[in-house]
Amino acid sequence: MESVRTTSNPQLRRGLSYSDAERKPSVIVIGGGMAGIAAARALHDASFQVVLLESRERIGGRVCTDYSFGFPIDLGASWLHGVGKENPLAPLIGRLGLPLYRTSGDNSVLYDHDLESYALFDMDGNQVPQDLVTKVGEAFESILEETDKIRQESSEDMSISRAFSIVFARSPELRLEGLAHDVLQWYLCRMEGWFAADADTISLKCWDQEELLPGGHGLMVRGYIPVINTLAKGLNIHLGHRVTKIVRRYNGVKVTVENGKTFVADAAIVAIPLGVLKTKSIKFEPKLPEWKETAIADLGVGIENKIVLHFEKVFWPNVEFLGVVAETSYACSYFLNLHKATGHSVLVYMPSGRLAKDIEKMSDEAATNFAFMQLKRILPNACAPIQYLVSRWGSDIDSLGSYSYDTVGKSHDLFERLRIPVDNLFFAGEATSSNFPGSVHGAFSTGLMAAEDCRMRVLERYGELDLFQPVMGEETPMSIPLLISRM
Ligand SMILES: Cc1cc2nc3c(=O)[nH]c(=O)nc-3n(C[C@H](O)[C@H](O)[C@H](O)COP(=O)(O)OP(=O)(O)OC[C@H]3O[C@@H](n4cnc5c(N)ncnc54)[C@H](O)[C@@H]3O)c2cc1C
Image 1 (cartoon, helix red, strand yellow):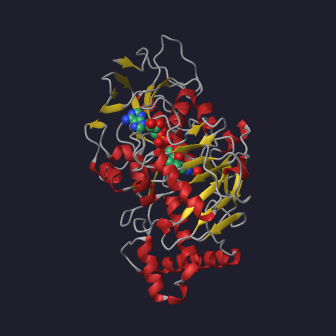
Image 2 (cartoon, protein in one colour):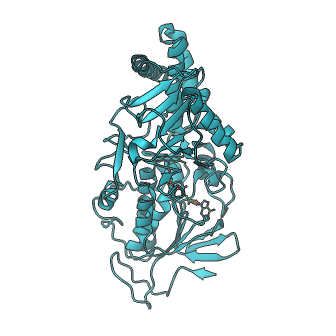
Image 3 (spheres, protein in one colour):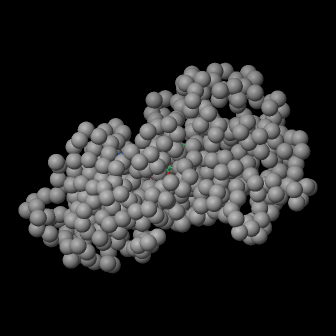
């Protein structure tokens, strides 16, 4: 058994350094994505003894920058959502001098893109007139406003697609025909991409409960991983350590990994993906309380993937994205043009929901070919890619999904329930963020929150609690939850 602790004489005060003979408070952080790394960094800096256990042979989790093309490509997160000082990651990204390419300002109907620089095509490769796209965008917003009225009227939740059907029945003038209908499906497809889920599974009551930070959305031009690497510097990280069991007792935790090795500490922070928690591949002893298990079961996890196509040269229009409109959102396509942001001749095809799941059943070659065929529809002279990358976030056993979302009939409070600690177990990760679910900055914030909750709990036990010193400095916004039993 490996102990995270050193000796047994508690001398705990934040910011002090400890001699070897002194006992440091200890914590095991499980999961080396943004949430786990942020928590580990904060507690390390608060003089805790920290061990981070990560199942993969790399850190970053769903932040995954690939360099095999000779330049950075993000296979997971690539946008900073909220390019402004309100974003908790802004100080770090600013300090690192990492450039961002802004793809939209605030309140864009497409979330992360403005309708400024794009080209949409129909299935026959004819470009859709820009004024039609704008007009349908306005119709899409009107439909969403109408769904809000339905939400106010009905006590029962329903899916976004059901709400759309009711709107069309009530206001037939909003039901679009022909090409306009296909463009509307494309808007829906982009909304589905935001949640990584199909409209018939997204909750009407809760779909807009997340907080959108001001400043629009910006691509991390040099990749996201430098942010993770900076936070991880100097931490005690064990790669290839897949946790299988977590035992909690009043005076500490014992964590077992796949090869049978165990670690003990005062507390643990569980920062693994919701998709992994759902499989129950980690045994908790004693069992997690029912309210926690229900939150794990009821929150949704969607799939979004990236099929990255690297071409010898650019042969497509100089726009931020290309799209193919179709009769159903499932058949629509979206290609992000990285050439615009990075100068590299790369298009990224991004399917989500059922389509992403179906494509994961294909080999990498077949998936790439599928994406290329969508491109060929609109650019018949497209030449084949020279290199490609295919993500599989839905079937990867260390993620089992891309990010969380509100499913029909379930409360948005589930995100908070997933976050609330159970004894000396603390929970972090994008799916524990009720304000910013499904995002990197959300994961980061929950890592800091879990670290602070953990610090308070452990120091309280040692009688050295200093309530007024949060782990990451005074300005860090923290919400300290009430620990309520019988949820
Ligand atoms: C395709 C895609 C695009 C995205 N785009 C954006 C974007 O543009 N902007 C944005 O803000 N967000 C985006 N996101 C979401 C963002 O990536 C995530 O919300 C965030 O990175 C999650 O961080 P996390 O720490 O909660 O989880 P993760 O990053 O998944 O970290 C969890 C870690 O736990 C490890 N783990 C799993 N099981 C175990 C185990 N049993 N024992 C030990 N370790 C384990 C995993 O290997 C992983 O490293 C995207 C995600 C995907 C997949």
